[in-house]
Amino acid sequence: DDEAGGERASEPAQPISTRQELTPIRLSRHKLEQWVHAPFFARTVVGCFVRIGIGTYSSRAVYRVAEILGVVETQKVYNLGSTKTNKGLRLRHGSSERVFRMEFVSNQDFSDTEFSRWCEEMSAAGLVVPTSADVEAKKTDIANALRYDYNEKDIEEIVANKVRFRKDPTNFAVRKNQLEQQLEEAEARNDLKRAEEIRQEVDQLEERAEELNKQRLKGLSAISYINERNRKRNVQEAEKALEEEQADISGKPDPFTRLRSRPKLVTRARENTVSSELLAQLTKAKEEQDDAAVAQITAAAAGSADEAGQGAAPGRRVSADGRRKSLGKDGAEADESADSDLFSAHNFDISIDFSSQDPLPSLHPTAAVPPKPASTGTPKRSLNLEDWKKRRGLI
Image 1 (cartoon, rainbow, N blue to C red):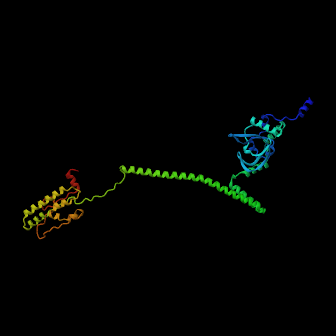
Image 2: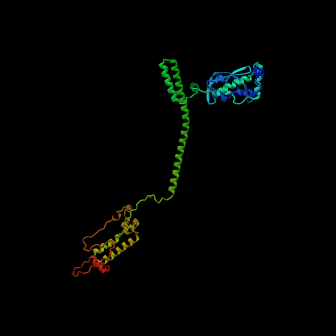
Image 3: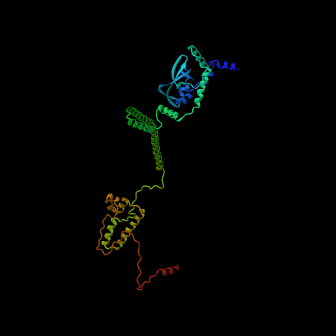
């Protein structure tokens, strides 16, 4: 038995012959993204395999099985998932070697066709495919990487690498403060070269901050334009609604609105005039001392005054035609503008003979005053309020 075991141990490892044997040491793009800044990245990935995309053919992506020979730094900083890096992989497919960025690595497993083509290319180049022992060794390296215990130094290196490839700092103010401190230290050491590099980095940082600020304000200006447009539209709609409301109010009577009006002056409601003919007759009768004719003329004047008073409505002015009729020929010669003059009713002349003993009768009708009874000589007794109430039966 011991001899048989020794023979099996001394047997050489067999090269792999199936795709399933190579799959355990295949690295996906997702796994490379997780390890790209780790300190064990280079020693772990060398010897593993990836499925790399080399282009398209007939609108279909073409992939090849490639072995990782090493890790190099490229001139281009590119995105690898959520991080940035400038690292590339030196790959070999058969006799061909080339550096590829890790962003072209596929997350899918090898296909049977791709594995068969890789075996053919290896045989044509005279190369040996990995053995089962090589696969086991790389599986152990991958397992150790998954269980790696990071220390403080490793974390600082990872953070430094991420910051180095980051285009914009998380906080521009903090980064600028750090650069200014480094600039002071470089000037204190009299390191002019390093000081100039820091100044250039500060200038680039300020330019980038200004660019981002313009982009941010560009979005805000669009929002401000929309707000201003909506504000103007609201003002126009409010003015239109106010005009419509005013139009509705003007078309309907409002009992609470004070109406505009002009006052009417009511004068000469009862204008009693005597014609000049009657005045002439009255004057002639007085000169002849004919009492009967004077009484007759006075009665005729009073009757004409009553007719004029009854014909004119109270509170209304007598028209110019009425005055002309009452005044006769003298009224026809009156001024046409007398209608608009409040004092035109008194603008006439009357000749009065003061030599006559009999007073002229009143031109206006007066109520007849009963004659006073003859005084008996007995003083009239005055009544107070209490006596008057007793006589009336109120008390």
